[in-house]
Image (cartoon, rainbow, N blue to C red; front, side):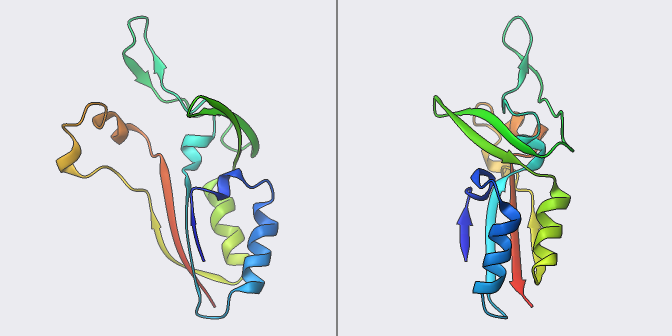
Length: 134
């Protein structure tokens, strides 16, 4: 099963993983990406800027308070669901998965000249997880 940037839109992640845990055969792979919990924690998913528009920092707040967050994506209001890293990984383990890969991707060195790319090194944006059903 493969999921690309969808699980953070699912209110009942635990229920979904229970069902996937029943559907997938032993030895089957589950690979998914989500917005990193450090990225979804605060909700706005935008930097803090100074009075001249320079990036100051990225807000991480309410990290341990899981649940609904309102964000703007491509100019539209959307609802996402923040979970801690502990929740993502523990729910997998509790549903019979063995973790194979946990990756917090970062831009490659050859992309650092692209405007804004160096700022992407200041906070994690994505989380990639690979697991196999035991």
